[in-house]
Image 1: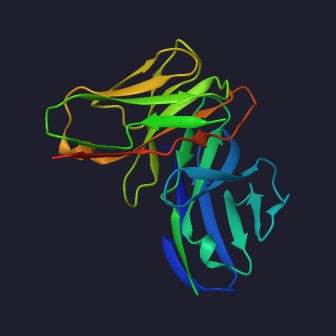
Image 2 (image 1 turned 180 degrees about the vertical axis):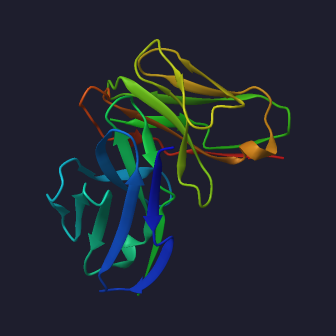
Amino acid sequence: EDKVVQSPLSLVVHEGDTVTLNCSYEVTNFRSLLWYKQEKKAPTFLFMLTSSGIEKKSGRLSSILDKKELSSILNITATQTGDSAIYLCAVIMEYGNKLVFGAGTILRVKS
Amino acid sequence: NAGVTQTPKFQVLKTGQSMTLQCAQDMNHNSMYWYRQDPGMGLRLIYYSASEGTTDKGEVPNGYNVSRLNKREFSLRLESAAPSQTSVYFCASSEAQGQGLAYEQYFGPGTRLTVT
């Protein structure tokens, strides 16, 4: 059974802290891994990672994929209250059209 | 550019009632998806449509039916609602996947459904 596991399930940090969110997967025929941020409504796309070891960066957020370890991390530096959200990890398989999502990490940034 | 739109935003049903959730996208995407999101369980795929004219079951299809009306629209029907179907429902769309291609999915704002 294809599985995506995120950790931690939730965490609370203070503004300015750096956080690392983890995503591990066990799927057949891995193609790509995606990160989404979900605030009050729809998930919004952050990154797509297909190749191992290549960091993707957007402002204070960055992510990297390790295909040997079957995992990815999402880093957020200098956190702000606006970073409070659920962060979702999802995997696309090589064949077919489906995404398999992890349960998400709930991040709360306190001022 | 509206992206992915869903109606209604909220709905309350009694057990046994039926309803259809509507979804439309204006990005000319080939693939469309219906998910449900429950606390602690992430997003689970109910049904998807890889292209106009095709539909396939996802992880949790029981109790639901879908129709890909045309390239833009993909509806989800609950024939006889049950309390276990209380959830937030998201529609999404993407370029065609598969055969070495992978594209991100764009999500609608969601429908919060309560079945009493």
